Image (cartoon, rainbow, N blue to C red; front, side):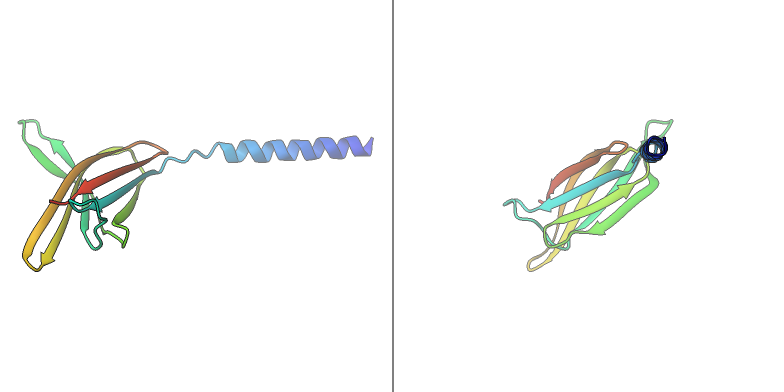
Length: 124
């Protein structure tokens, strides 16, 4: 009888361990933005801003307080993690030195609960 009791106890413990960890749902919303130039080459050191635009009651728009910014890595990418789903506007900028000019790229990214979203923005 003892081996059956031990087997049952082991089964019970394993079942409880699996059910208790499966209740924790991953709700993080991950965004990956890649910035490229007009030739498709990844752009290093571009500033990327994610922001939410909200419509006002009189028909205008305002920028919400929810914002995130980062600078692209050598592969032209930045990554963000948010706790809630949202739709963000993207503005990527790069100031060149010779000749001095500002390149800008824009886009929109939709973040869903527990999922990742990828977007490529082209600087012009």
